Image (cartoon, helix red, strand yellow):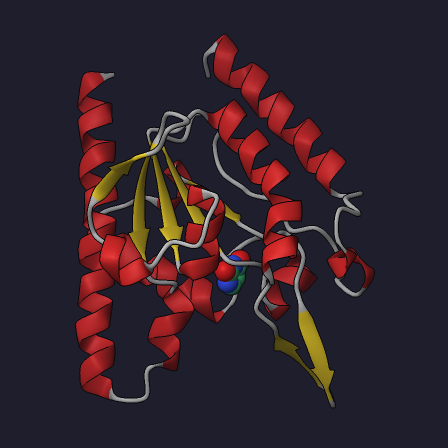
Length: 209
Ligand code: URA
């Protein structure tokens, strides 16, 4: 670990602790805990999801439930080592409505996405990644700071004014929701193709290091 990445790692821990007490919107009131981003301070690729789900809320870690399993499978197939990426969410508290024994996921709204963006901005400030991968509409809204359509923008590297490049793709949960097997296979292959762009960038950076 270089001295710079040691400093960033300590700063990420401090940021995580600060976010644990976040009251910037009301989502903290019913969630178990803030689920902050995770990964090495020197990660070149940041993967951004929507918000923690039921499993993530209980575990306190991003992408450890069914969407996480789908993501892990696609990352592996694309040749991306998840341990070398930083994985985070646009919104860091679980938003849900109780339905009997289950907690039904609710999509975060624009004020909640805006209230939470400070943490994403501060994560990026410390990480200074080369590429941010926005998975799904909420992540794209956070990464671009405005509503950004997925289909029009997906699968190509886009320059962001703040420095890193961005790549837009679908959210892994979208693949889990597709009812027909053909569509699921096709969309999964497209998702893997999108992630291969991140894999190529990581290989290029490793060669340059
Ligand atoms: N979906 C997300 O967007 N993020 C998670 O951490 C889990 C599911």
